[in-house]
Length: 295
Length: 215
Image 1 (cartoon, rainbow over the protein chains, first blue to last red):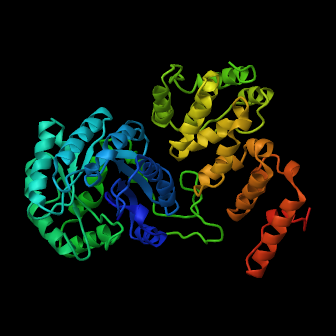
Image 2 (image 1 turned 135 degrees about the horizontal axis):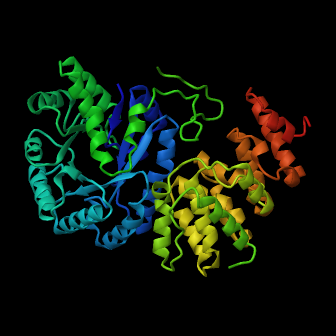
Image 3 (image 1 turned 90 degrees about the horizontal axis):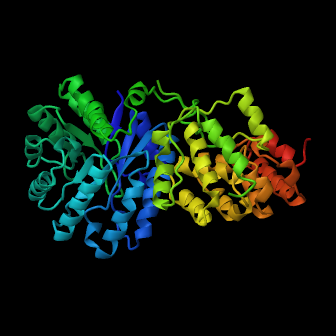
């Protein structure tokens, strides 16, 4: 089964992860711009980071047969640095036009400050201007309230809800999101937050409509294979194959294809990995490596 | 318009005309030009650039004896930079397109360099491009591009050749390599050859030839 991980921070992952992901059936990823584990202090740092998301990381993914897309934004945490806000937002009009950018994100709340309100609202306007959907991060602290405020802000801006993906949902927030027109993603972690069994329960209760899963794998304790593992757990729990396929393939593709920047037919036709083939003109081989063929 | 660029620009426009309706941006506002440069892959499209024999002849007689571009959007981006030659800020513009570009945009800048007026102004940009870890970008400057042999300083040219050997990029793709062979480059190749043999690794014909072990 072909899989998409629609939220994964590959800049923090090794080539071992790429190999394992490829072997597990991951065909495409969406890497959101987020924070780097410690604060950035220059606007230029963001510009170089954006450049790496559309450049180096995209190339690195291609070496393992994985199509890489990204989202760009000023994340909620760093929205609280007044010295950065205007400068980083001023970068976005240029960088949001890059062909592999499929949404504005991650935007949203961290501490739920007025500064975060302002930056969230301004980036909804940018998304509107660049005809991109929006990826919303929900806070880990006071999550339910943060989710309510996110939906309220989207409505106040009259931003189309079907073009908004609200991420990191749990049992408390999923019903709120499904009651809106927004999509709902869930990040499956090894020890904290949402796990495979709880996700199975949510799907059994709410179905698959507008539901996505991701690993949100980053620098912390996380697992880039969680999409595959959760799909396996759903299968083992008797969830129907068409529902699983919706959650791990059709839904993420449909949501991000709203950017107009994904060749859906090409991804659907994407064959199994054969490293003997060139991928987009780049050899997937490092000097000296034998090609692997996965059927 | 610099005299040596104008006929080339006419040629590029003529090649683009049947392949896309998207006009080159001629307005002064730099932001508009940068935006159009980026948007080209989506607006002009990524069809391969296939030249008919008559086109090829025209290209050759314009003094261009290397492949212009692999795709139509790349050709469009190259033409946009050549067209910008008369702007007073063209140096900064070219560097900005490179620095702020994704992989395809960077490749287009590198393939445009030999067509720009006074290309030697971009030696540093080209040398920096050779440092990339993105194979496609390296190939855009090192392969089928006359710029390195004509304009790169010896240190940078030699390092580019070594890197091509490391990446198993065929040396036949480096235009003008024979004219830039020096005792020092041969020495580097010999040392690399010895290193690979000591490690029990295979050695390529390119490497043995460059090291002077075969003709």
